[in-house]
Image (cartoon, rainbow, N blue to C red; front, side, top):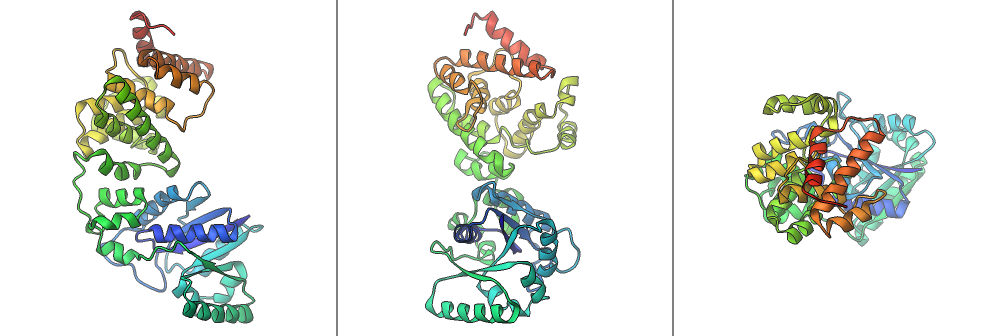
Length: 398
């Protein structure tokens, strides 16, 4: 397997990095990409009053949402004390991936000074080097001279990466202009949202009362990258259902964007939030982690984003359902269930029925949830049972 190693301070990671990584993946045939934020880079200092190591790692992880599942953020340099020497990093990764082909990705300045790094011979014995070139004739000549020198001196394997879609921007420029409207186009959407909610680099943002468009990047910043398509799909499905059944479209979008905002938290973190927000739990909820995020998510949505009661309730009930749900609550429950990325046996029939009759779709969704839980010998929450029974008592039939 060909693995790309891309290090940097990533303060913050931006679309220039993403564009370069894509070019390297295409030209080298990379099958995996490891993004590695530095702890203490040897060649420069990290500005004071800026993002912490944890925040830089979080932003790097969020940026992988624009690259796909073949990319991941690694904290191996952040776990080491002292300067983040590349020689230490590549030796560790060579031990982890002894049978794979490792490619170290780097920009122009780094490539042209590689022989001055700490233990360059060690680095070049562990990895091949892919250097990003800006395509200019003058730089091409300098690159070819450096390539020949490294190959002759160290027996290095070097590839020059041509990036026709290069994005000329620096992290320094982004930090300086973070409140400028045009800056956000240089950042992965979730990274921009994270900067806003953490108020990094002097970012100014009032998180309460945001429009769905302004809320989207911030909402995405709460998610694992693999969950982002689901939340965006839920928003789009919520729009369709709200228009069809007369729910408030803006409220539906806000609820959809925030419905999984605490999903990635551990069971212990969920329980701690329940204590903080005064959320009372029954025995089934306390022992079933997947039931907690709807409650903690609703509480966070209210406290951080100031959502109205209707949105709070729609998020709160989107996992179990309840008797006598409002139209908005039904819309969010079913949008979460049938959004376009969902792929399970029976989903097409559930979509068809939901778009024919919202109550019948809801009944089928509840019944399928109950059946699945019973097949797995898991407890069914009483609210789900009562929600189904309420619809049956109203005369809803499949």
